[in-house]
Image (cartoon, rainbow, N blue to C red; front, side):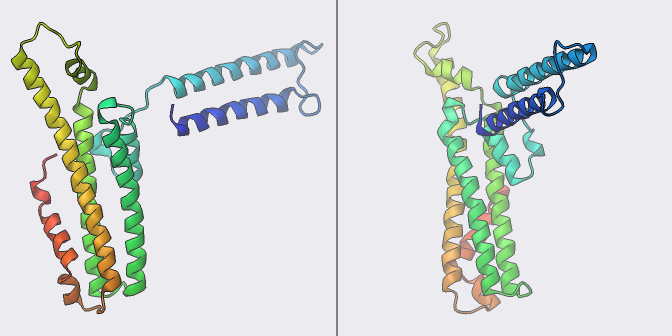
Length: 247
């Protein structure tokens, strides 16, 4: 159970307890169970029964019910990507990769915010230089999320349990060595794709760091100077490669 679910469950329990205290306490509503008023007794017992059902269902939903996974094609926001990746964070095969991808998502959000703040300090939003920087930042961000989408596509079709079976010493003996090797090669290809996307995103983050440094050293706000910045040229080249990326 993740932290968010634990907090929701705790909130539910606290809410149910508070409601029962308000309804059943003599100093408040004072509904009495077992008293002379049959209607009050029935209401009190019903409240306790419903409270128990609510807590049981909430506990089941938090502890055992699998979360609804958003299809990759429907993922749009930064939070959607975090939620989608979090679904795979306990998969042993990709645990470190998912952890790194989540860390990269956090870092790119911070870098983007820092870059936008620095640009507003250095340039007027109406300047061509500012517009060029903004355009490049948003394009490279799209490329970053394209790589995250690629990771999710691979994770969503990868059978971790089957991989564990074939990777272990207890793998089925009735299969030929050739078949086992082909399956192993296929799984390694999945791993290589995910590692490739992570490496590409790490490169993007590095280039954004370089861009931030170059902006801080920029002595002129001339549009042509911006075009000729080494890091801007590197990022432009990276963006142009987008059409060659496989998802």
